[in-house]
Image (cartoon, rainbow, N blue to C red; front, side):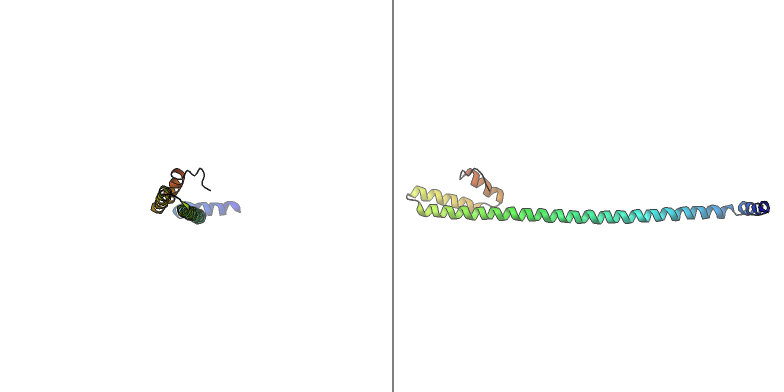
Length: 129
């Protein structure tokens, strides 16, 4: 009973082997396409996660820079006020001239690095807080 059916199937496969091969190829392509789709979704998720992390790092860096600039401006204002008080207390013209020069140096500074350099070199401040 099984043998005659096997023969029918065998004959049918011999006649239509191209259709069978095309079906196997189509099934194989479908399975690979599904895998490729899922890996593409994972890749897209990874890219989105990395982009979010990058945005967080950029925001943190900007906050740090803003904090440093704010601290530099605060140091500048404190030092200017101290120099103005020194200028007012100066007894001689030389003392007033020195205090005025220091004030002008601080006002001419364009960046926080320049302010730090002036404070360190011109005013002999050993450490910036």
